[in-house]
Image (cartoon, rainbow, N blue to C red; front, side, top):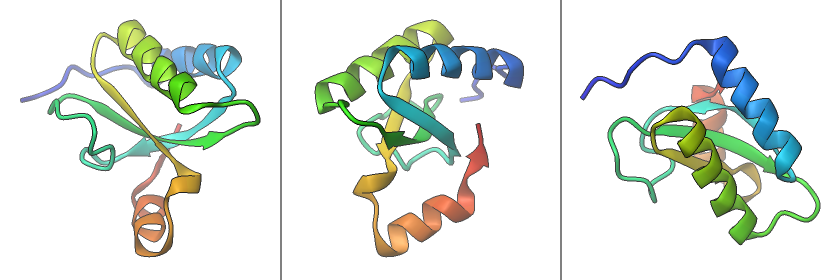
Length: 97
């Protein structure tokens, strides 16, 4: 399935809104499949950094909020939850936000 193109300026606008609303920082886009809890082919997978006060409930709320803004599923992966080979692969494949 081909996902519709989202202009980078629109992505950045919505990323900024999410970063203001939730204690996290969106680091960049990951290849599809890194957020293995999201099964849609047109999902956006994002690497995020946790800021003080972010709970897993808050992370889920951020995914839902951003998905509603973009009109497509979103999966967020915490950089702090990756280690070793997984972290190296994510950072090598990362597209800056």
